[in-house]
Amino acid sequence: MTRHLSNTAGTERHDPRPFAALDPHGLLVLSRTLFTCAEQIEIVRLAMRHVSALGPYHAEAGYLATGDGLSRVPGRDAGAPTVVDARMKELGEADGSVSLPERSWNWAFGLRGAGGLLGYIVVSSRSGPDEQGRFLLSTLVGLTSAALSLAATRPADPDSAGELSRLRTERDAVLGQLDAMRSELQLQKTVHETLARVAARGGGEDAITQALYEITGLPALIEDRFGNLRSWAGPDRPDPYPVRSPTYQDEMLRQVAREAGPVRVKDRLIALARPRGDLLGVLAIEDPEATADDHTMFALDHAQRSLAQELMHMRELTEVELRLRRQLIDDLLEGTDETSAYARAEAVGHDLQRTHYVVVVHWPGNAADGSFTRAVEQATATAATRPLITRRGDRVVLLTEVRPNDDAVHAALAHELGTPDGAIGVSTRCESPDGVPRCYQEALRALEVRQGSRQRSGTTFFDDLGLYRILGPGNDLRELEGFVREWLGRLIDYDAEHDTELVETLSCYFDCGGNYDDAAAALTVHRSTLRYRLQRIREISDRDLADVDTRLNLQVATRVWKIILGGRR
Image (cartoon, rainbow, N blue to C red):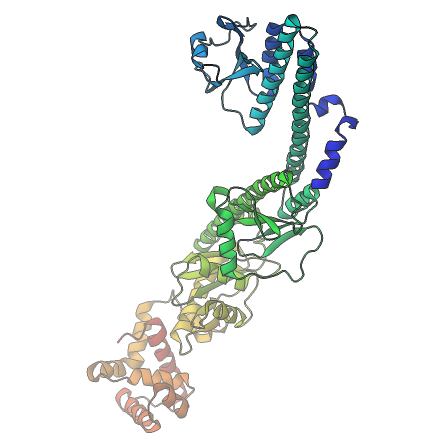
């Protein structure tokens, strides 16, 4: 960057571009006119007329210093607000603010020479000038002061070579400042135009780092707040990219955040993208030889602003998309118009024409907050598609094109959440939006069966429920209760009266396939105790456990008692 700047400065006068492009504010042209003008009044008038060419400014009045004080220079704008001459005398030859109606910023710029105050130019604007505006106005005042000084010497001592030489030197110094300002403005213009082109083409992190690299000649990069590389432009990209400890990263970010603008940290110049105070990214330039100058800092600072706008825009788009996707799945679960559902799904980039599955996830001890929802989404997303996802109470509900692969999703979530004690219910295939509510109930049913079984954690598919599919929500609860009373009533009453667990023993015995050892282990009782309980069950219920039909009805009754009725006595 430094080499490019010096080459530019050294060849300014041979630039083949039109002079107007090199002197955008016309100060060089004005200076030639001012220094050839012999009348001081005309010099002030010329300067006043040029004020508006420097920006959104207006020359309200001009004054020349005389032996009797300040004399107003007759203006040509009769409609201009009136400057109170008495206020000008109160300034006491200093620069200062004056009061004008309908103007929020008014300033009297003193015109000074070797002998003191030569006059004033009063400038107004609806808002105060920025750094560039102040520089331009100060340059105009300096040129006007030099021209007034030169004009003042002509009638008094036209042959004074020394005074003329001093004035020429003063003029040349002002012109040199103007050249430097023009070079500075040209470099700033290059930065603005380059980043404006990036924004016009859609922006993007890679485009911003590439533009910054082209402007500065130094490698540019973007990291997230955790130090992970997101984009790199230029040579010498580290591979693998170094990983910093969280403690070091946090301390570095605090150090940079304490300063205004880019901050050097070892071999890097770092700027933080913090729109609205939220840290969204880190923009940096690799500068191990410390060659960066003020122009590099200017480019980095402006690129950081572009990055902040880009990241803020992306965050807002993401939030809007998430809200629209969540509203869509919420409406689908409740039942919504099919035509509207297809149109809304297409708007958020989801193909609702494909086959889908409803998945319900519950993890005890993990509220369905943002972190849990993101973990579920990451575990179920694929390279080709993202699920629609929402929260219902302490459960997360997904509508996904991909049927979960057995226990793969459960294993991924168990690893992410640090515990396997969670359950997942999966519906059958859903072919159209109007089938989503039914599939949602299926997934809930599968989840409930899983959580009511001996192995409460894992994944259950509605397809695999078998008998439980006809015992789901929607059946007449009174009929189910009557069925249970018919086959288990005596045992339920006996348990309630004697505080025993004969129904639970029979349910566990059937769940273990009639295996004595497994059932005894599941109930944590001795094998002989289990035999005794089964004998008591035969006696109290007056049922033959060896009869196939009896065993089937008893097993169904115990499942209904446990799953549907919740083990109520």
